[in-house]
Structure formats: structure tokens, C-alpha cells
Length: 283
Length: 263
Ligand SMILES: Nc1ncnc2c1ncn2[C@@H]1O[C@H](COP(=O)(O)OP(=O)(O)O)[C@@H](O)[C@H]1O
Ligand SMILES: [Mg+2]
Image (cartoon, rainbow over all chains, first blue to last red; front, side, top):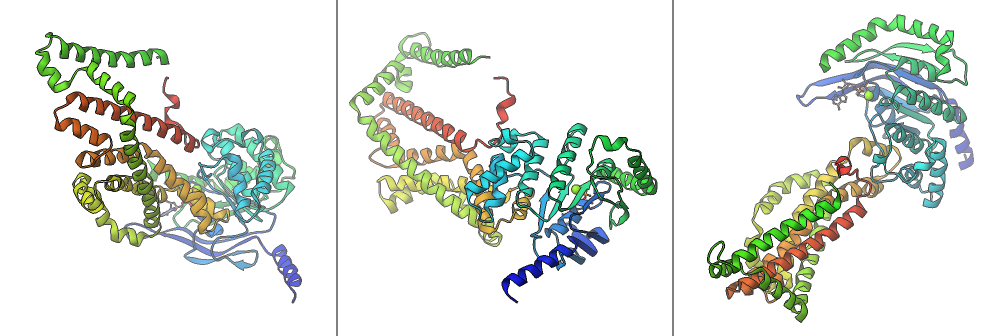
């Protein structure tokens, strides 16, 4: 096989294969007192290439943990993570990860934060900055290129983070409650921004949120996780809403309410139980 | 309060102190002016002495020596602190093994080392530089160590997901974090570099501000002692101001905590 043939073969393989497969994954943490806490138990999930999957569940159920395992930052205690037909070892090179916490480098300006993703893989600084400027434009922050993260609002920081991840054209996009700390209006705007970027260049997306409305509005499929410990997937709903969608308008469509009611009826008990549990623990 | 009022008030404090000092040391209002001026000198005489030093030019030589010693102590101590701090932070085993020795060395009051350094390195500038280095090194070392350890896990994970290898992590994540900690202790470490130089000179040398003060003291020239102290103060304030300038340049990315203060 020549190198060219091999490349095409690999390409075909990646094109046909699922972006992410979690096969019987369990994830556990060892506790300081010597015990073991199993956060995620027996989870099976397949995300196809170009599919937008939203993951919903009560706080503390293991959503971030699941994304970390998909990213390769955590090793499952049991089971296997596969990405584009290959078992994952080390970090997931196909994945771009927008973290729940602030994760921009505070000592770099917005544009340097975006450019760094290209620079580390060998792009010249000039070229990287040029691309970064384009991406800052796409997320509507051209005027803020030279600001440091602490000079940006929470929403603006998330948008810089989005540009930082997308400039590398990852085939899988992992997003952990990216709009969590934002107000309701900003969330709608960010949702629309994400949808327009995603439809221009479809990637497999795993989008974690605790907001069912947001999940239904954005995703092709909504996954519901139960409350931990040993949290599992307890619901898997395909969202039949047509695209392109608009986050504000979609809520007035009758179909949206149908889907919402269906999911909510099925899960009310479990989800409320989860929230009660976490609230008891927190208070 | 506006800037002008503030500065006027600050000047007022100095004026009140000087006037009080002047009255106490030249009139019988407070006590015997002879005794008072013997112990505290007279402000006008001190001023005259300082002017004389600067006019003659002899003081520049001493200032130059002290500055050279402090600068060398700062540079060598910082370089050592950065390198060792980094090394220890990245090699936890090494850090654990050396931990008690580092603590013990840092617990030692550095003044006691001055005679040893004088013995080893002579009475020239290097014994003073060495004393300054022992002070600066630990401050920089602890800050760099902390800076590397305290990198936010989210920033680190993010950098790794962006594809950084170890070398790139060092350059884009660990180094800036460590240096920001080091820079935030710049005032302290520069201050200690000067302390090392002056104390070293005071304990045995033939030049520098510390030497000048010591010489005056040994002949009960209180005016000379006070003049030396004021020159030293001015010198330290100037250096501190330069450090502030450098700091503002290097730490632009840091949120300023004083933004909300009502100035
Ligand atoms: N490093 C850790 N050590 C021990 N327990 C952890 C650790 N990280 C997370 N957990 C626990 O695992 C559970 C899932 O956490 P996480 O995935 O962050 O939840 P969320 O769904 O809110 O993102 C929580 O109960 C949390 O307390
Ligand atoms: Mg989370």
C-alpha cells in the first residue's frame, strides 16, 4: 500500500466510523479516605460523525466526568472509549474541549489565546494571527482582540474559548455547560451563534447542559443521565425539529412542547429525585 | 480625595516632623538642644552634609557600589530561584527530599553568614553580593515553585487539549504563571537585594552606603549617619518606583484589585 492509498483508506475509515463510542464505561475516583466513588456506571453511548448530542442531568451526576473520559483526560475504570473506530489512548486528538471553568490563559490577549491553538501545531505566528482574527470575527469579538481575559465578560470569554477550540477544526466538539453562568438572553444569542457555526461546518458535538429547553433547541438527540453515584443514561430522545433553528422562536413551536412534555413526563421522577439528592448534599 | 490634597497632606507630615526636629535640636523648648543634637543631629546640618556629598561627588561612587552589589545579587538570586524553583516543582521527589534542607537554610538569619562570606570572598563587592543572593534566592524560589504548582487545572487541561507538548506547556503555561508570582514579589526581592548589600557593607567593606554609615558611626558623627540614612532611603524609594514601572509593564494581564477603590 502506498502512503496515498493508506491515507485514503484511513480517511474512509474515519468518515464511516462513529465519532465517539462509549462501550460499557464505568468511571471511578479514589477518595482521600481510601474509598472509591463510582461516578459513572455502565454507560453505552454512540455519537455519529456530524451529530449534535446534548447531555442533560442533575448537577453532580457525572456529565463533566463523562466528557473528560471522552477527551482522554480520565481513564475509565472499566469499558472502552473509541473514537473514529480506534480505541482511545492518551488524549483524544480529534476532540476540541470547551471547559466548564474559565480556561483561557490569563496572560495572553484574546487573539493570542485563539492563535495559540494553531501555533502549537506549527503554523507560523503571522498566519495563526490572521486566522485568529477571522475566528474572533466569527464569534463577534473583533473589537476585543487585544483585551486580556479579565477585561472580558463571562459570555465574551466563552466566545473566545469557542474560537480557540474551533480554529483547530476538531472533528469532535465537547462542550461542558458552556453557557451555564450566562443570563437567559445571552444564552439564546450564544445558542444561535453555536448553531450557525455548527451548520457551516458540522462536527460531532457532545453538549452538556442542565437546561432541557436548551438541549432540545440545539440538539439532534438528547441524552438524560440519572443522579449519581453510578449514574447511567436513562433516556435517549431524537429531536424531530427541523433545521435551521432559532433558539428564541423554536420555543413557540407546538412540536417543541410535545417533545419537551414527552421527555419531562418520562423523567420527572428520576430527575427530581436527583435534584433532591444533590440539594440535600449541598445544604 | 483628589491627588493634590493627598500630596499636600503627605508633604505636610514631612514638614511637621522636620520642623519639630529642628526646634527640638536648636531651641530649649523640648530639652537641652546639645544633648538632643548629639543623639539626633540637626536637620539643617544633615541637609548641608547631603548637599556637600552630592556637590563633591564622593557619594556617587558609594551609591554606584551599592547599586552594583544589589543588582548582581538580584540577578544571580533570581536566576537561581527560577531555575531551582522550576526544577523542584516539576520533580516532586527531588522537592520532597530537599524540603527539610531548604526550610533549614531559609530559617537561618542571613546576617550570620556575612563574616563567612567575607572570609571566603574577601572584603570586595562579592561577599555582599553573596549575602544578597541568599536573601533573594529563597523569595524567588518559593514564588516560582508556588507559581508552577498553582497553575489552574482547567487552564492546564485546556492547554493540553489544544495540543501542547511538554516544552510548549513550559513556555506558554508554567513559565508565565511562575513569572507572574515572581514579579508580584519583585518589591520584596529587590528590597532584600539592597538589604544584603548594605548590611554586608556595614559589617565590613571599604565602599558603599553601608560603609559610609558605619564610618560615620564609628566617630560618633551622628550628622553623617543621618545623612547616610536619608540617602539610602531616597535610593530605595527610587529603586522601588522603578520596580513599580517594570511591574506595571509585565503584569498588564493581571486584574488590578484597586480598580474599585475610590481614588
Ligand atoms: N477528582 C474527583 N475525586 C472524587 N470525586 C469526584 C472527582 N471529580 C468529580 N467527582 C465526583 O463525581 C461526581 C460527578 O462529577 P461531575 O462530572 O463534575 O458532575 P457534573 O454532572 O455536575 O458535571 C460528583 O459527585 C463529584 O463529586
Ligand atoms: Mg460539570
